[in-house]
Length: 107
Image (cartoon, rainbow, N blue to C red; front, top):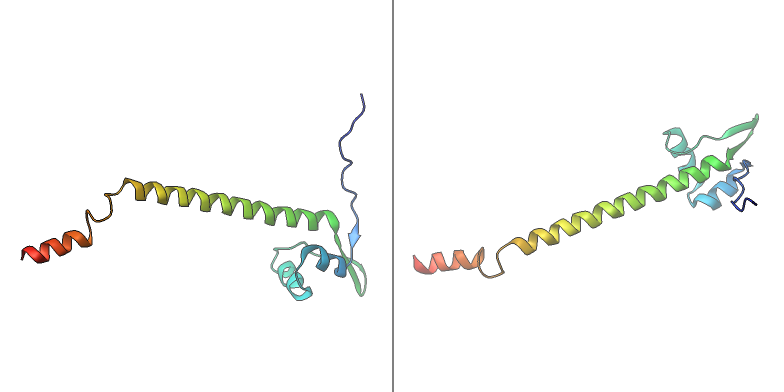
């Protein structure tokens, strides 16, 4: 039986211009995020040269997408709860301002 699964991503080092193009974040922000521990740190290749592990960069991108999906799901659940809460209230006009107006008129 043949294995038709995709081969694992080959690990390679990518230089800053490719990281910028891949991530869509400017150079300063990449270094800022890396210093804060929120982005993969570069791998030193020489005294003035560095690169990033392509697998680590792709993992960072995947984590951002997963965060977006989780946030979207949380927002959907919150909206669903809000709609449910609104449908359980008394109908419009049966409370709130209408009651205040009626109380004022009776006084």
